[in-house]
Image 1 (cartoon, rainbow, N blue to C red):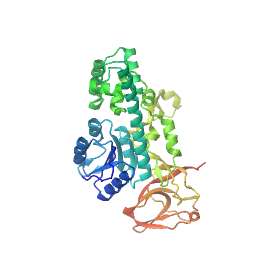
Image 2 (tube, helix red, strand yellow):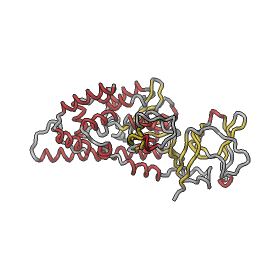
Image 3 (tube, one colour):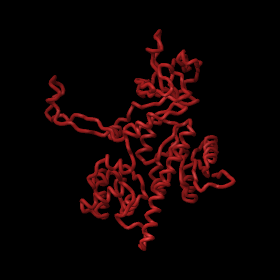
Length: 409
């Protein structure tokens, strides 16, 4: 572990964890340039040691490390340091990692090659949120000090956190105590065979006080069931505004082409599915409505746990004009990841041939493609003015085929 030296050390520490020395040192230098104090680690074991000793404020964590998965370590890291800002860095299957990171309460994720501007803004926003929380707590402490109260920790059921207020209100309406919550959560954990659904008394207190700003999904589900709360109310209490966040993600433009994180797409979205009558004979032709017992609203996130989503949203970067004018910079694309094989174009125009979302050694791009022997040839639209690029097959990943384009307004 090395610590970058600065003339005036910043009080904000950012731990960079990556086994690639080049990436690690580059990120540490960028972090230092943004005014933070960088720390470095190469393994999960070293990370846990540094967190215990240095107590960093943020963690830039590679998804794959020599001694384990950064994604799998999120639960442990969150338990040891609930307020730590964790941002996942990954070069593999960004959609899957984004979903898993969101479920395990990472603050966000950044794909490789790393967009340093995106990462800088993400850190700034995270620290800005933390400062607002601290000011709220500090203001409450000063008020109590003036009123002459003797304060030993936060009194039970007293909170400035929106989620805490929601929980306290529900507990009062249902006449439940902390002990009741613990007992019910243990019962749910046994029924679901999921120990993460258990909520200890201290955990409830930390959630109510705001020390745990965004609990894990399993614990949120326990609270929602026990307190008879809606997911919409709980999401609003922890600051998630799904429709607005998805719209903002789509409207965000950057120099590089990038994918919108899947949790921004699926959060709070539901699908209607039919529940068929027990006596329905699917081998017979009949009116469908007569076979439906009822309709059910199912959350997309729940369905995604059985069948990972294959459609993703992509924003074409301001510097990526390979597909212009078919998909110019600023376009929003719908990409089907199941269609990741290059189809021979034949003698068709560029308006008719398949357009692909591709990961190259230089980053993501939207481009046409052909296979030539053991090579992949990336072909920009003739009107773009760009030249063809040839790569070995193992150097390029065809992520999916563009099946929809929304042009910049």
